[in-house]
Image (tube, rainbow, N blue to C red; front, side, top):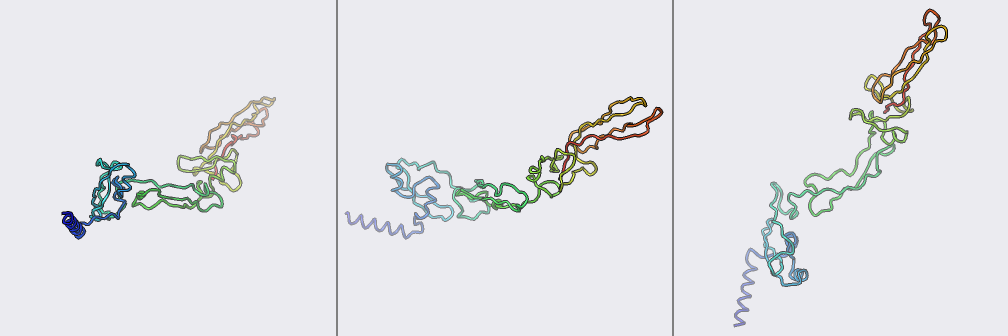
Length: 261
C-alpha cells in the first residue's frame, strides 16, 4: 500500500511539472510586494509559528509564483492589490509603483550662488526610491549657467551687496541695486524708467534776499521717497537792490539714494 501511494505521488509530481503551469519561485519581488514571505524558513523565522504555502499569478509573465504566509491565513503585512499597468506602459515595470509620484532629492548648489568669476552652479540629483521618480519626466538639471541677474545683465546680487547696496525690485520686473549716495559707484549705471532717474531726496534750503536793507527768508525744496520722480527745485533771489532782484538762483533737493544697475 505504501509503495502504491509513493508511485502515485511520483506520478502526480511528474504530471504537475510537465504541465504548462509550472510554479516559479525565482521572482521574490512579487511575494514581498504582496506582503508574503519568499520561503517557508523565512516565514517560520518571522512569525515563530506554522506557515502555509500560497500561489500568486504575475500579471506581467502569467507565471504562478509560490509564496508563504502565516498559518492563520494572513500575510506578513496587509497586501495591496496588484496595480494594473498604466495605459501605454510596457509590462514588467517596477511592481507596485503605478500612480506613485516620488520626489527627487537635491544636493546644495556649489558654489552657493552666482557671482563674478562663477560660470556654472552644480548640484547632485538622486532618486532614493525603488519606484521611478516622477517617471516618465526627465530628471531635473544638475547644472545651471550663471548670468548676471540685475537689470541690464551687467552685475550680480553679490556685487551689489559687496559694494554696500541693497537689491530692490521695481514694479516686480526690474532688479536694481540701491545705494545710499547721490550717484552710482564707478562701473555702475543710473537706472531710470526711460525718462527720470530712480532716486530718493531730502529737503534742501537756501537764503533768499527780500529787500536791500538785509531782509532775508529761508526757502525750501520738496522731497520724495525712492522712485522715478524729478529732483525737486526752488528758484530764489540771492542778490537784489532796493528796486528789484538782480540775481536769481536755483536750489535742488539732496539726492540721498540712487538706483543703479
